[in-house]
Length: 206
Image 1: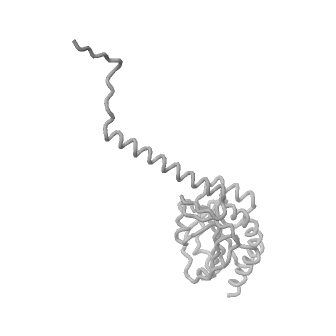
Image 2 (image 1 turned 90 degrees about the horizontal axis):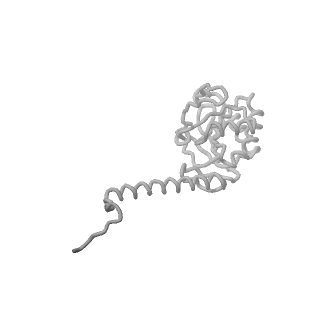
């Protein structure tokens, strides 16, 4: 007589569809971890490294001005300090310095004191500085504004829509807009005080 001994309940072989679901789940988690790792590396190292999650290149070099001649895309910005809405088209007749920045961008931190200083110099001469905080948190942005005492109009571009409309390629990035709403120049990287002043003076003379 043949006897069969059992030490426990029979184990069912894994079904193919169950294995497929598991493999897909592992792939999703590994992909998410890879993206988070790249983002963390960009935030920690800063200069010159591409943030592959957002497509932003952090530029730690001194900016040079590129000549442009095209209409500045209109946008609305909810300001951090007042909650009011600023619309670019409402600033026609003024020279506008439009600066894209983020609290996690090291070159933006280097540039911020210069922008506040030059803003105070020109604010009574028909010049408006506008800061667009992109891909950031409101809490971190608020700390940044307090740290550098920034007083010019600033608001968030949480979805990156404004940056996309302007063809943003790096942070910091600055656009110089004429009184009639044309982009005259743009700069990628840190804009030095002398360069910033010269660009504004040129537009004021037009």
